[in-house]
Length: 439
Figure 1 (cartoon, rainbow, N blue to C red):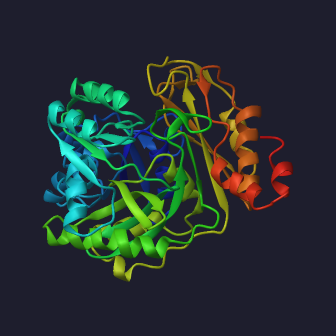
Figure 2: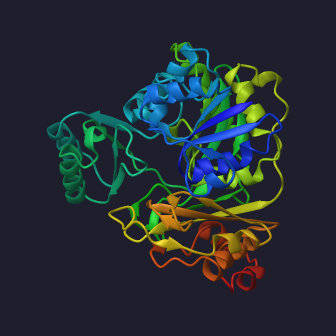
């Protein structure tokens, strides 16, 4: 099969890395790709927000199967457009993608189908939103209704900061995405990223990970697209509960409402004292979670996607996972998620990749005409490492980052997986201190 993969981030590099391992994959083309993807796939310079450009390329290159990585093309209806022409593709239709493209839609959908989620209200004008804040005790979770690259969520601890945030939301802080605002009940508990694959009727669990959204150590600083992830989460055993209470009702509900969901369902969950509650849905793999999941997946991803596309997941071979732990540490440009500089040279990636168990996935990188690797994005590299234990994986990833990667323009969190590590310490695991000396 001739495969077209749409996207350019660390998620897409991980997907490309996994897809090209399939015996079904004869040629892999990625549009537009990045400096790392270009080493394992052909690149095509296509505007992925332009449905017609994607269609024209797929037709001219006789593409057999299209995989959509990021959310914007899905929200733009690229699956609808490709399917109408008989081009096989993986991902949800535009109507089904509303589970991510509209938080207000998702909250109302959860209410209609008894899916546990935080209490909420939806506002389209600042006056009503400000009145709600004054009548409701803090803290407040304020969300832009539309797509905001993972940054459209703010937690305000008091009425004053909430009022200021609402001013910024309705003044265009997130563009059109913030013209409608959802204010949610503040939930407490550990957060989990849970993934499933669906074909409109059947849903299969695709495992879980834990993400780190805040920019700086100690879960401080602004929200980002994600600064690191790890999988599996030690001691987490509620996958079956999540499938029964969240995922399966969602697939049934979308079918009942005339928008069958096919593709990746990524549930951001709060594990509360009363059970899992949906924070938000995404309709594609997470980034940086995809990077760790692709390292753990021990079966044919492309075959799974093809089966989902054709509605035959019920007959698909079992999904197999290896028993290793995987950590992903994001190296981001100084200033991210705000303004950042571009063009700095990055060295040492090849050296890091020579380490046993280490794989560096590229995100915001590009090869210049002189062959040098340059930083061109906010999140630039993903240093991913495998180990028999979480401690071992962490040591490998941080050692590769500190000792091998040479780039003066970036920063990273030094406490990825800190919740799991602290839990081990609190449970009396004395090996933890020794295992972490070199981090």
